[in-house]
Length: 111
Image 1 (spheres, rainbow, N blue to C red):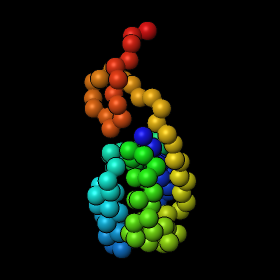
Image 2 (image 1 turned 180 degrees about the vertical axis):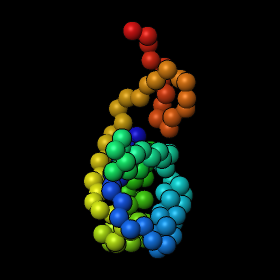
Image 3 (image 1 turned 90 degrees about the vertical axis):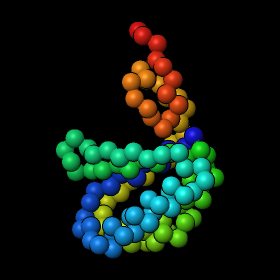
Image 4 (image 1 turned 60 degrees about the vertical axis):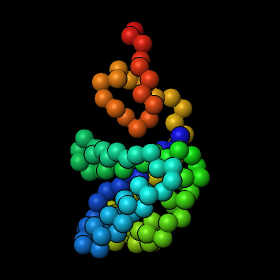
């Protein structure tokens, strides 16, 4: 499993941004191998993180090649104050099972 975190600061988000953002969201969900997405806001509210989960690198590559995604990358400076991307392989995932998560939710053993 691969995760792709898109961490960014917002600039001016106009109607064109929201239209393209909706297209990108649909493209991600329609890409074979898309597993899910979650979003986070930093404690100070300055940065956002949109984290996408993919079955494998091929699925992420297919999404990265989508024309709407390429268009958004071309125009990012219109809408973002800055960005940083982290691509990672998910090696392990666990919790207490109290809520579902896109990654395998193996039950943690009590300490």
